Length: 264
Image (cartoon, rainbow, N blue to C red; front, side, top):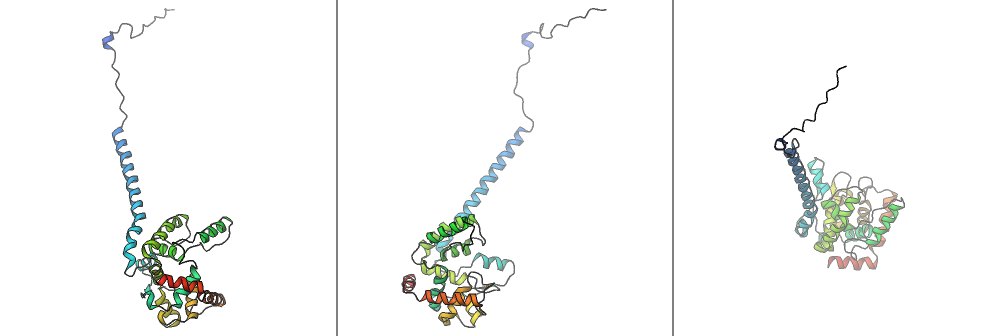
């Protein structure tokens, strides 16, 4: 057999000067990857900016609602989708006094004493939700105005979180009388696109809001939670029972004082 010839290492006789120089390895497409990351950062930053602007926009718009005839988000959506919308604005002073009294009695008995949020009712609503019980949500009239003007319908913790500080801002900037006036002109009061007290009164009773008596005003207040399933025009036993309760509450001396404060 022929002896195996050993092969000397290649570097033994290599001149140190000829040794390769170490250079950093460039990753393929490295520059493009950095550009993609930078582009995503810019997109995220712009999205955050848009969200902040949208969140602050209602606070900037609110002072302009001291005058004029605002419309609700639902009204605007119905217009955009081609659904019928009927609304004729009426100032608070042009309505029957029985109507705002009945609405305050039915929707928010502490309307004139809180600062936009009834914390006791809200706490009770949270407790009911944690216990799995049905709850009205603890929303005040001011919260409903905030939701109707700037937010969306439906139960949502996010919406509620946005609604609470916004309601406090509306109460501070607009005051009780203006908040109630806006509410009575944007609330849905009929089954087919009737918004506001004037249109609801004409639809249900064939007379303007200024001519409503105490019973008719209470019937309108009784359908406010859901005017599609409840009717003031042809009230069922439940609506009539609620109307009787609201008529009694509207005559309460405490509410009378509260209402006088709201109008002052």
